[in-house]
Image (tube, rainbow, N blue to C red; front, side):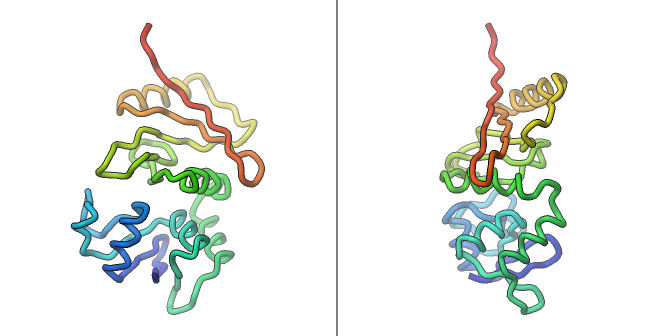
Length: 178
């Protein structure tokens, strides 16, 4: 499968490839289809940089820019320019994806990722994930804001703290009434 890097996104122009990527892991978003169902995909797919790198590393896609093939190392450099703390965010993204979860950007929830167990349109994302650096302090106000946000949208808030090169520690926050 082929993708073309355009600014800070990768476009998969071939419709059949778009369907396959979306069907096999809910990668990307079809252009012009806000809540896509697999059978409705008839448009190119837009991938964000993190999922594009994941697909490139897993040999599911080739990426080019101006007809020049982009290597994994080049893609990492592109991602670093676009994302603050890219390595840590990618480590968390990869950790969830490798465990079979579906990971989407969490920007509309004010966090790094929204994580699904089955996929968008099948279930709601039960988890909101924010990536923190080990040793980074989190204010009590920050914890309350995260908890209130997650509770208001019926999700669990998870703090993801990368550890070493391949491990991630997770701390989940739940509100409950006594």
